[in-house]
Length: 222
Image (cartoon, rainbow, N blue to C red):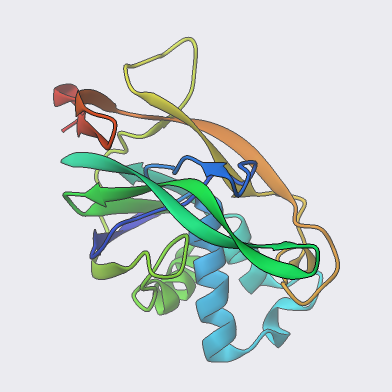
């Protein structure tokens, strides 16, 4: 069973690869499956508390952890290259440290497509999806627009050498199928469990300078 949620970006987006350093971090072009699921967990805990996730056989935890996420993108992506100052603790004192960051302007809305196990899972996710207002870093705001029971065909595909289309390859985080609630709980000492997947974003470079790169969704994928 599939449905989708449409989100309109309302300011610049930035989400670095989890293996990047603080000194230099390129941004993913779209929110990762991990960041979307963490936003769902955040809303569920904020509204209904964390107790419902504590059991090993929590169906609500499985509704979020096991959902399959795909994307439909359109328009253009303008990647702005910036050097910012972050505070770094050295010798017991905080000091400013120049660091590279990318901030992305998305011209169009993004359709996030969810594949769930049943109607109950669908209604559970829709209880929280319309309440989400940012993905990735705090301040990367998105406005929920609508749900669709008949979602579009995804145009962001997992990398496959047997069926390769032009685009940009990026490494995305996903919640591991083996993860338990303790692995996503910030107040637990257990390590996060993440899987990696390589997705192909169907865009081509249209213009660039030292300050920015402009990408546009390929005509075959619009």
